[in-house]
Image 1 (tube, helix red, strand yellow):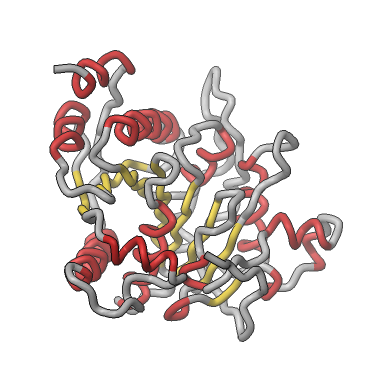
Image 2 (image 1 turned 180 degrees about the horizontal axis):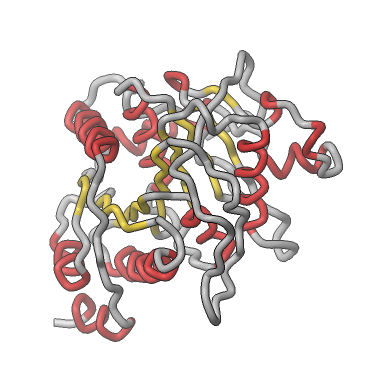
Length: 311
């Protein structure tokens, strides 16, 4: 598969953020989480952070969900938080320059940047930003996420958007990649119906629980992806207090949509694809209407093995 790396031509637009935040707060004793600047409210948008095991399909899920929100008439901003910076390429049809790239190009003088340097219009008007990441071993991803949010606020891009989706790197739960939890109202976890994905989900659940002590973020629910069945996820949900929001099968048309650099809404009809599109639209509608927070409690590692790993 060939992926272009040119910028997307054409106009860029404005966007918005989420619920107001309290003045700067601490993550609590013993925390090594990255502390973000929360003194400026993000606005009125509904903000979601999408997490899950690496390779589980978070970017595909996030992009299709962004497209679904846009089809329901909402103004959407998707922020990719992975150094691979490929979160939005099914929306923009290319790898767009990252925030860290454009900051480096002006010697980190953010005041020299224009909106069109880091915000790109994608499918159906979805606004796309790729945070990128520092060179390996040289810094924390939380810094990049923080700089991205700061730029969006300084350029007033978080004042005209209805939905913001953070697509967050893999199953890393360090301070840097837990940073979007400081801005989101609801965290969503993408998983498959297998042990490794569920083990990663348990770790993410613990990170969300830790952040919820001092921030507004709460767990919204689980999106089961690339799975014909949900029995193992259901068993874990029952033990922890989680609940499924949506279920997407291991459908080849979804895989091919990413290879074709497009959302499922742009694909030619294929068996099962109409149901997938409708599920995304239903999921977007449910999230827009508001999902109740889940007071889920993570399991100890050994307990997951006892629950799922052995007969």
